[in-house]
Image 1 (tube, helix red, strand yellow):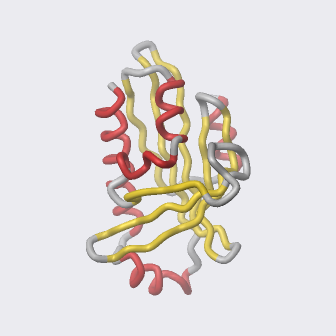
Image 2 (cartoon, one colour):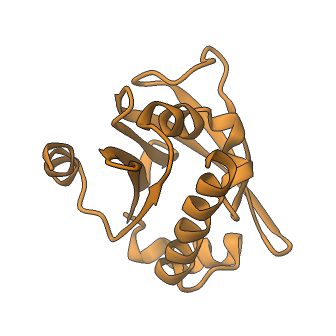
Amino acid sequence: MGSIRYILQIMTPDIEVSRDVAAPPAVIFAAITDITRMGEWSPECVSAEWNEGFSAPALGAMFTGHNRNGDKEWSVEAKIVDLVDNQRFFFDCIVRDFVFSKWGYTIEATDSGCRITEYSQDLRLESSLERSTMISGVSDRATHNRAGMEATLERIAAAIE
């Protein structure tokens, strides 16, 4: 419960989705922090790579995710803002120095493996919503993100278990 309390201090998630996985926390942590594998899990982020100067997860490390929704494609820069081995991985999505969304994962050991929880917080300005919809083709971001998060955790579990 301590890690969840900490998370709520750094962000107020709009969406939170959890899943129990029959794998130890270290295995899940290694999978989700290898951002080059994000395209395996996420239905929207089809690939990601470390930005120049970065090659592994660390506080302050930057990466770029490449997203697709139907015929819409766009890329987003992200910065790791919280990283605790086998417990937490959080990053901010940034456009022109503006954090427009926060994403993250917590991992908690259970008797049968662990519980992974994915969090999302939408910080887009009201004035940017129309442009965001044009770029991504997503008008209901909350519903879209929840479905994507559920699919992501399902795919992680299927690949790891």
